[in-house]
Amino acid sequence: MTEAVKNTLLFLVVGGLILLTGFTQSWNAAILILNMGLISAIMAIGVNLQWGFAGLFNVGVMGFVALGGLAVVLVSTPPTQGAWSAGGYGIVLALLLGAATVVGAVLVAQKFPKGRMRTLSIVGILIAGFFIYRAVFDPSAAAVEAIDPAVAGNLGGLNLPVLLAWPAGGLLAAGAAWLIGKTALGLRSDYLAIATLGIAEIIIAFMKNEDWLARGVKNVYGIPRPAPVVGYEVELQNDPSFLARAEWLGLDPVTASTLSVKLGYSLLFLIVLLVLLWMAQMALRSPWGRMMRAIRDNEVAAEAMGKNVTRRHLQIFVLGSAVCGIAGAMMTTLDGQLTPSAYQPLRFTFLVWVMVIVGGSGNNFGAVLGAFLIWFLWVQVEPIGLWLMNLITIGLPDGSALKSHLIDSAAHMRLFTMGLILLIVLRFSPRGLIPEK
Image 1 (tube, one colour):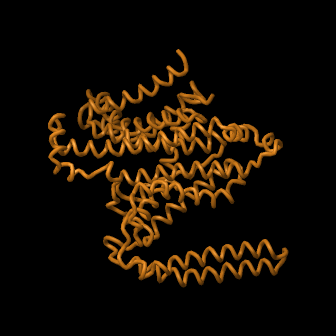
Image 2 (cartoon, rainbow, N blue to C red):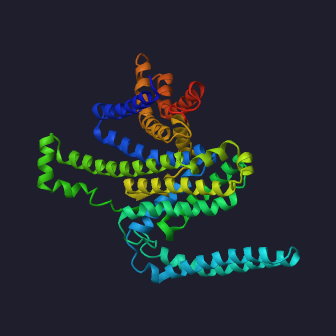
Image 3 (cartoon, rainbow, N blue to C red):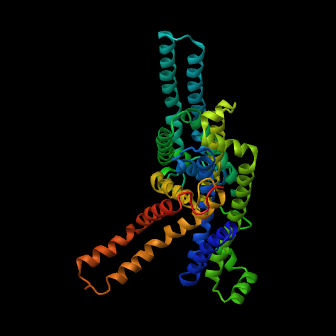
């Protein structure tokens, strides 16, 4: 069997599993797995750029995904009436003062000679800047959060089409990655992992606690859909031509409208995935891609050949984070709401890394395959585990402690299965299902 045939069969098997879900469970569930699989594939490409191309161990994936979701709120939601006049301009001024404080401290550190005077000047600038920042920021933020806190309490967005928020999410994540990379990329791989995980936690904690930005843990609801590709179920159910098509297909209007909306998302997500996959493949085959892999395999030799390793690491770190930010914006658009508490760095970052390792680190198609396979298992393993436990314990009496324990343990099948799959793949195919050439 040739490599191309094997890879095609692997994709067909995963596609068959999703179709089987539609036939045996429901098409709503199957299309939801498809949509989240497409988004997960984009996240996996972003991680694969960083790890597979350059060997950067980024464990802060969810931080950049969360920034992508935040961009959707800032770009596509309508502005809160009176928020800017109440305190929005004060918040912007405070943020500029904070940035000026940091810049001032950096300039003093660069221009002044080493000694007590430089240390005292830096400390003085930071302390004075902090108190000035808080004096401007605190009353402004409180004024914004006091505006109808039950439904608003934040600045709102620019009320632009939500499709513009997807590249904006990539840009926001890329900007954050540049700031992080300028300081963290000098660390060794294990310390880089710790630093990026900590930074992701800081980003998510900031989003949870700063209500003026995106309502914090009160969440933002009613995010608009990417019209005209994705409509609303109620509008479709009132459209006579749509109702005629639904009747011809033998579907009731509610089911047909739900499937139509989800398939609209699938089309958009597929287009984005194909574009990013094509760009990643072109980058992989280019001289730049060969240089990145050379740096990954031997940094010392690449540096001796005149390559600026730190600069190239920063490039790939920013690019991979931008891709994750786009995926985060797409996921928030699909959900129709921003829920900061749903971003759990340890849990979902682990899942994306399993996708990349199982699929094939360094191979873009392997990352896509791993994303679909692992997400399908993540969704389906728990109900399959519950069915299996009920089958195993069918002969035990209903009041049996063992039966109750085994059935209750089905909820833990997800993490157990992910670990088991990871171990099996690392044992029998350590380079993944579709290994790097």
